[in-house]
Amino acid sequence: MAEYANNPKAGFDYEILETIEAGIVLLGHEVKSIKTGKVSIKGSYVRILNEEAFLIGAVISPYQAVNTPKSYDPQRSRKLLLSRSEISKLIGTSQSSGLTLVPLKLYDKKGLIKLLVGIARGKKKYDKRETIKKKDVARLKQRGIEL
Image (cartoon, rainbow, N blue to C red; front, side, top):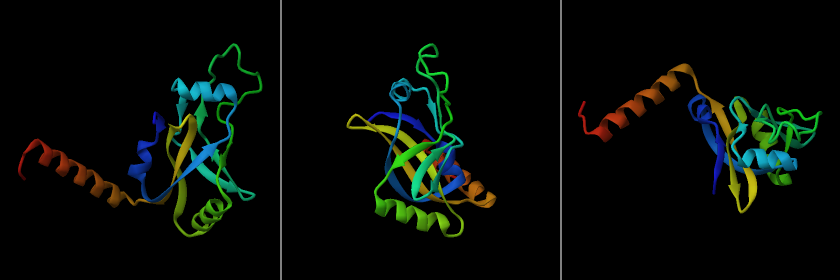
């Protein structure tokens, strides 16, 4: 399972409550571009429109600039492939207060490109500070330094 892109800031800015795996509708040259690592999901998000899920704000750079169609938009919205039950679950959670849908990582599974979507709650500033403190303490313990 090759990982092509991840969103480390999502784990810092959000408390991930649950994850869902989704397929993505891509063009042929986008698949080649993703497999060469020309993709970024930082700052992107998932939105539900007309009972369909879309990945918005992800950047997939052209595979070969010369052969890319002139009308190609690297930041276009990409439809996510989910079952009806998963979409209805996402609709319910995204409408509840304070929850959002965040892409966590883009990876390969049996030759297909999948997106891991997290149902998340935004962290407050003090929660972020607490997370940093926990990481520092764990790092010090690993080094063998007592506090």
